[in-house]
Image (cartoon, rainbow, N blue to C red; front, side, top):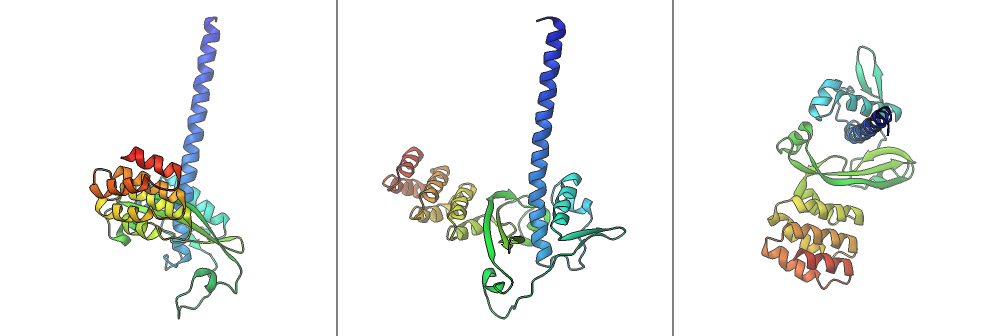
Length: 257
């Protein structure tokens, strides 16, 4: 190949690599913006911003360890949903409609809002994540500590209403509780999250999860137990799983031993 052709070829490869890297960065920023928008949506729909005004962009960036561009993108998402509005000289204000409901007795969201329409649920994300400063303060854990992040998007008549639980919670307690969730995807994600939890708390819960009716949940529990197989209780649970009715569960358990 002539020198000029080789030079042109390398230049083309470099440009393609740069474009691909730029696309990856944009996609990652979009994902972070969506997650930040989810957290802010939950806060504003539950009245966390008492004066009706969100903190300044720079404050949000610091509190949630995000770039200013990510914060702006998250606020743009909330504006597109009609939840906030930008007012010159004031800042970003909450304009979301709140649905009235009684607080005299404990009810599920679908039951509470049955007069307003149909409530649907969608589990979008479940897994461990570092706690942003405002979340860590509320949960009374160190900033950056592992928490379990669950996104369950609830819609009212097809329109986004809330995320339930909607915000991070201490990893072990929330993951153990989520092992009893009606949705098998949540139970599976909870078992996976317990793979990074302390063994003394995680192993007993994972051992119980081996009786889950869904094989995907049992597989997740076996894989998590493998991370704790230095303990006698985890090895005993894995040995039990080698007789599971599901072939994959048996294979993972045998491999974990």
